[in-house]
Length: 120
Image 1: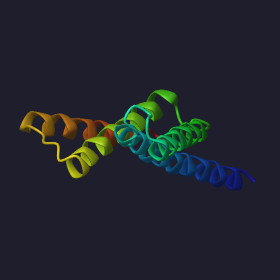
Image 2: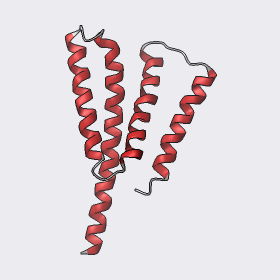
Image 3: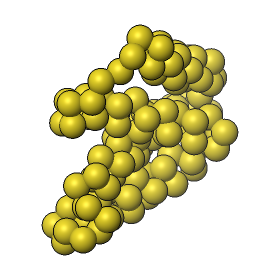
């Protein structure tokens, strides 16, 4: 019985990480979506952006069932930040200075560091 409980808890934690990843991707989606809404004056992009916002919060709340909020929130926003930077480069032809590339790299290192040292 103890072994079964251990595996169920490991499965819950694994699913929490998956939920957190989905939440981060949806956060990136709604951040990019805001650009397309033109101040929420365009119906289609506005609806999609709002759906992504709600979905992001739902998946974050599911992840928080088994993950510490300090770590989960930092990783959630980090995924959103890095994803939004990459989307800005691809979709809006934005550019990054070498210092900005380094700074984004430090965010990635922080995300990886938090995950590796989480113990969860």
